[in-house]
Image 1 (cartoon, helix red, strand yellow):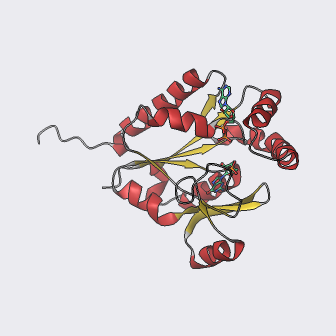
Image 2 (cartoon, protein in one colour):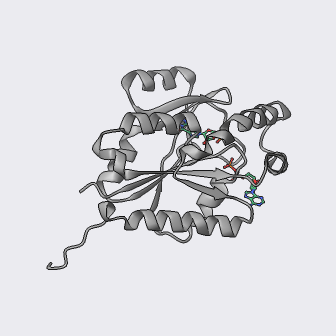
Image 3 (cartoon, rainbow, N blue to C red):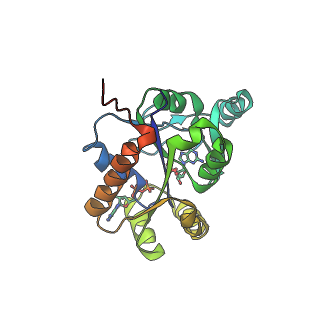
Length: 203
Ligand code: ADP
Ligand code: 5GP
């Protein structure tokens, strides 16, 4: 029974991935969230084991050596990685797992799962801001990063946005409610695909 679904969300920092996922979480029951490991420092309000597993570089590298991660990448100067076990368990248990992963990580997953039975479990969604100018306004307004980090993220955004066609879906995050409804629709439609549903008309 491998009817689970993994939704990979990518998009530049500040595009609205967390915002949209939190909205959709109110409308789709029992969504699972992949909790990544990261070596970046927690932001005020972020909780270890909830937003991320915050780790040291040494611990992270030990995890990569053990093969704990489905993918990992250096993003904006810090390591981020997706623990393998929870994602595999979610797919085995017919659940819907949301993963917020940068474009390098999404590429690794696409490559690593290619030709395996898990390939069919994954959908790729790109979350885009209306423009890079609006992205900058949102990142600054969020106020969670230093000026130096904001500039690094904006610079990386110029490369990241060019990857949008690698994804099966694009959600343009102009009005948040509209964008969140689109994301909800993508998830629900993906779950209705015949390879992800069980039906026994005679049962
Ligand atoms: P990400 O998770 O992609 O880095 P966030 O969800 O943290 O992005 O969003 C970045 C900032 O933009 C946050 O302060 C959020 O409240 C704001 N934001 C998100 N979506 C919208 C939107 N549609 N309109 C205006 N502001 C938004
Ligand atoms: P933030 O520091 O703003 O939480 O995340 C920065 C970037 O790291 C975002 O683009 C986010 O998608 C990405 N990211 C978060 N977790 C992972 C992960 O496990 N793997 C990869 N490759 N990227 C991640």
